[in-house]
Amino acid sequence: MLDAVDKAALAGTIARLKKERNAVIIAHNYQLGEVQDVADFVGDSLELSQKAAAVEAEVIVFCGVHFMAETAAILSPSKTVLIPDPRAGCPMADMISADELIRWKAQYPGRPVVCYVNTSAAVKAECDICCTSANAARVVNSLEADEVLFAPDRNLAAWVAGQTSKTVIPWDGYCYIHNNILARDVREKRKLHPEAVVWAHPECRPEVIALSDKTLSTGGMVREARATDAREIILATEATMVYRLKKENPDKEFYPAHELAYCANMKKITLPKVAAALENMVHRVIVPPEIADRARGAIERMVRL
Ligand code: 13P
Ligand code: SF4
Figure: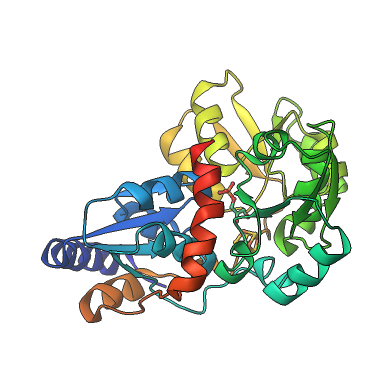
């Protein structure tokens, strides 16, 4: 554990190295608080893809999980994208491989494939369009076909199916963190905080979403926290989400629906590793150009929407 003095010293080193390397640090909303605090930009997957495509700095230090850093590398091929710990993966993204997707598509000829950004670059290269939790329903509704394949998150697919008249055929993947938040967790938290509203991430189980007042991406939660009149909010999502929401809205109370909803992969990125990444210019995220070119098409179709 770093104490306040260590954190301040590392933040100073990181600020110096950032200038020397002409780098920006971008971080996902589930990153450790101290990592968010040294970032130039913090956001959800969609916001981070848009930011990665627009930055002018030569180096992007991506504080998030591997598929997110890959997306940044695909969208900014002339930049150096570094991930402070290359082992920070997303177990849901690993639930479908490119070969599995190719075989699945063959069973449903003519159906377009929507891939959640929580997939590898090789999987994105095989799909028609990407989506994030912030735009999944809009992406599916933008397609002409009546039936669409949706991978890999079955919970997000079920939520999207409720927002569209299209038939959404899901892959059987899930995020173990969101899937472990149960309806009874939400009911118990509601009993403890009867005045609170409930917001759920669309990676949650359908029965959890059914109990919630709003379904929001992590970026949606940030915006809604500023706008809402509610003083107490129960969050059915990764528990670190409380850090940014409380920092920006000190007058409101945020309670995780499940205190153990903790994405250990996101937390592999630490301040010492951010400093080491800048010092040693490691670990570079490289996507083979033939995969990157095909994956870029699917991501850019989403960003254009
Ligand atoms: P957001 O796009 O809502 O930030 O979600 C990303 C993610 O991995 C949630 O588990
Ligand atoms: Fe992947 Fe779930 Fe972690 Fe998001 S919270 S990065 S979906 S494992």
